[in-house]
Length: 101
Image 1 (cartoon, one colour):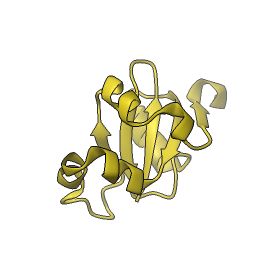
Image 2 (cartoon, one colour):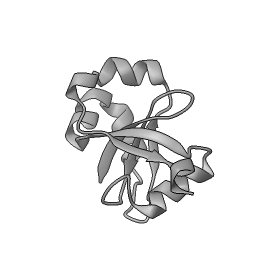
Image 3 (spheres, helix red, strand yellow):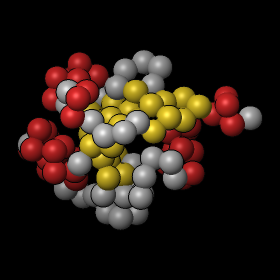
Image 4 (cartoon, helix red, strand yellow):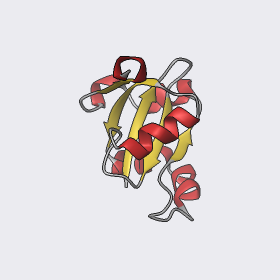
């Protein structure tokens, strides 16, 4: 499982995925289906997410299976920014579907 903070047009979200990374075409397609065609994503270690989100992390991942390719851990951008300071995030992954055309 991998974790990431995704910055898109509206607000940051925190996600968990069973894929190897956020550049995986299946994940990009799932995000596109949710209206996210352009984003900057920062990997976050799953252990960090578990520590910061506590029981909420456990609830979200309770029935997570390898076939579940994308789970949103946090829709609240303000809370995500409070729990995951920018200086703690990994190298960004930039995706712009308009540039792919």
